[in-house]
Length: 310
Image (tube, rainbow, N blue to C red; front, side, top):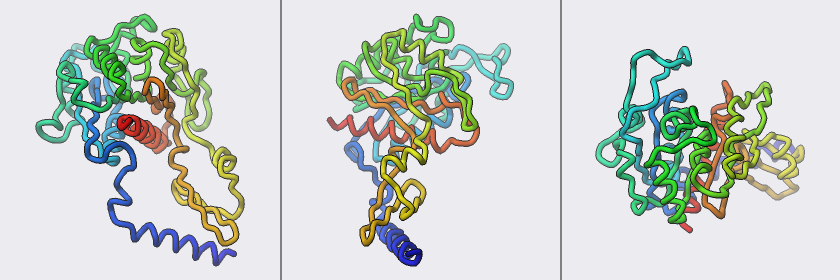
């Protein structure tokens, strides 16, 4: 039995190794090469702008799945500049959101950071807001006004325009509160509703969950990951199975079954009616499990691209 498992495993991996590059790298979502996504930034850095990981992961997954994208940010001063080592505001310093967000850009012309005031909904198929405290400080007044916050004029404008045009909206970590403030009766997730410390991490920003619920949104609890026990339940795995990265190979007599577990390793919530997709990402504070954040943003991007073709 062990020898047959080894042989099947080698044969399966050999099949994948012989596939052309497009089979491995090309995404199955959206209109390959023709889906155009707007990505909105609020600065550069978790404590005073867009989280670096969430911004980069978003761009990576868009590229990986064949989307074209342009980057936007408000051409205005941010609320303050944070010392990311001390986690406190720096003294006497201020920076422009668009200039700070330009740290994410790597190219010329359309790949440069653009002024959010120039974003035209008719030029894009969807819009995505990565998270970070810039959502609460620069794109809205949430840090001061809580559930009664006001949004930056252009942020409110583009959210309403994309929603009115039935174009998908992707939101990571804190960004759902922007949509919940101006779009009626949407459904989102920001992860847990209570801070539950575990060895895997904790949820320190659950006050935002209560705020979006008070705004009239429906909140759906989502795990930061799906446990192996859940995977076993989903696929009724037995001892005659092996897991390779995100794939599980199940042997049943002479039948070889290959399941892709990637969509289950980190969750995104999809509000199909309103075309709003959200994922908790760094609402879950973890020191080591960044790959779950990566996978969750990937799932959010895939759903946004899927709905952009409808």
